[in-house]
Amino acid sequence: METLKKIHENVAIMLPENGLEQKLQQAEKENRKLKIKLGFDPTAPDLHLGHAVVLKKMKQFQELGHQIVIVVGSFTARIGDPTGKNKSRKPLSLEEVKHNATTYIKQLSKIIEIDQAEIVFNSDWLDNLPFSEALQLISKVTVAQLMQRKDFNKRFTENTPIAMHELIYPILQGFDSVQLECDIEMGGTDQLFNCTMGRQLQESHNLAPQIVMCMPLLRGIDGTEKMSKSQNNTIGLTDDPNTMFGKTMSIPDVLIEEFLNLATDFSIEERQQINQQLIEGENPMNVKKRIAKNIIKQFHDEQAATDAEAFFINQFQNKKFEDKSFKQVVITTLNLQSNALTTVALCKIFKENLSNTAIRRLIEDGAVQINNEKIKEPYQMIEIAKNLKIKIGKRDFYELL
Image 1 (cartoon, rainbow, N blue to C red):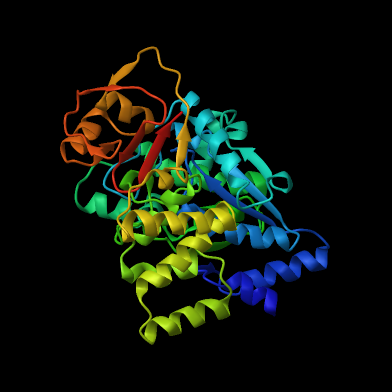
Image 2: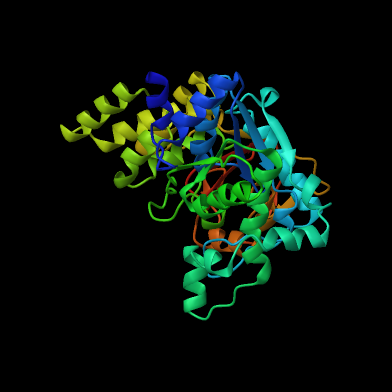
């Protein structure tokens, strides 16, 4: 009973409602492990706390001795999945898929026991699926069923184009469950339609239908949209401790309970106690600090959490910008062909994901400091020297060695 309660915790959707109990009883009767599937398309190289919500639930199944299966969408990422917005996602090249998948798998080990997980690539079966069999697969789903997906229905009603590959995408994802004969499929609530497609296709192939478990979508640090790289509102699993702390402190107060429940590993009793303290008038900033330290401990260690808190207090609460603070930030070694770079070029080294235009705007807005001096000229030449200190934005501090 305690085990069921723990697994049910934070689950937003369970389909059917009593499906988990039945699957566990069936597995015990057959003396086998349940097979729990989580699929992802490697559309970006980094995982974030939003991904961790589902991964930590997968970890619970792993700790109970069941088999978790990570399905890398090495085929589906190359066709582009529906985004839930009014447009399809840009397909990725094979090289992009391979690069992102390698990075994803490495980051998964921060949460799950990667050596005990089964990692599969859906290109192994979808690349070899004959067109005649693909048509047979598609024939098992009606257009009316596909139109039950909210974003498809909305776009159709608004006369917004829907490409055929978008309609086929959920069917291909569902076929992964047929191929693997999964007992359970997990995902965020935005994946409900695709996961239920797996149930339908399993039944059409005379297999026991998987149950669907959907976890809530953690909102990003902007407090509105779900955490997503495309929204630039994430806390990445590979972010350095100072960045993790600073981003967590920036969340609006309305997100405190959500982060407490979905992003921390506090016990139920600890979370209840913290919530009670908030009700009794505790300063939300103090609670955010506890949340930030807990998150850092999960993905770094306790000392890193303590150091990040001290750094935050020095830099943002005490408004200090002293040399000693830089010892706690990212140290980067550069091999440069020139002894001087423009401000844009220098910042680009640290902010590879930003365009030159975005970096130039940061500089012109006064968001860049070099050796404590605010630089507003994008093409000012900066002499590269040992111990050069660079601040980009509110939280990113670098020192050259």
